[in-house]
Image (cartoon, rainbow, N blue to C red):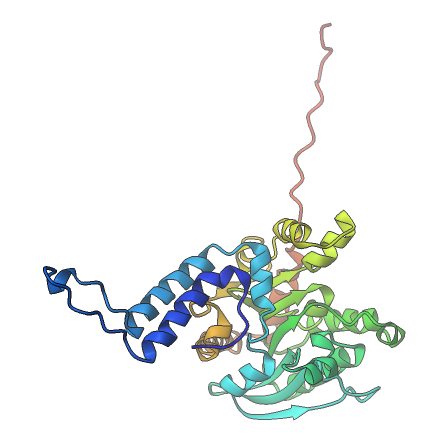
Length: 343
């Protein structure tokens, strides 16, 4: 059974997995009891029956996840990251480094490869797996040179008439002094501008965390999808709680997650994304290959539909997609009475 980190709401799963481990070491023999028919004997637990129970309980738990628990699942340390998905769905991947202005940023991975039968550019956030990698990748928080690197490679893809696939997984852009001095806000703003008019198809998927401008900096796309247990919002629940209630704890974080409407279902209802990509039972960290299969299938379907479009129509559709967001429907002003009103 998996030995990875488990969240507290998964306690029922821990117990059943311990029983599965015991059953796999050898089923306990139930002694024959006088006067009791074999059909009435206690059921011997087998790995198969316990696995079925485990799948059922997992399905029930994840079907009713709260928004805050969804955030926690999106941050699971065993959840697949960009490099994991590249290894599972890309062939012939060649990574490209550097923004040609300052340096390289390991928090943003860029490179050319094949997804299915299509050559494409892949851009994605990388958080790192162990402590050393996480520090090197700034826990997935990209610097300005990361966003400039991504844009430079996107323009290269445009030049070669290749589609772009971006995988978003960041709590937000890096907030340090150095990043601000090198133009963090400007780098993201330029990405938003330039991505909106790139003359090549762009498909974006939120694979884990989608935090604010740090996520949007590589997510101006023709099609945007979210993995089922990812989140996408203007701010993290902790940041929202700290601003509104001056403290971030379990209670305020949960309240903020509810208010932000950050789940995949919420974003689909609000028209921010185009599709929810289903994850295996128990989320992507329990079955990375299953999650990768769903991800690849959705990406290839979108590329098949977008790559045949006229480029003018493609760019205009992308522009209008974002123009529609946040529009307010104003009610008609009340009509003033045309004649005097009797007192």
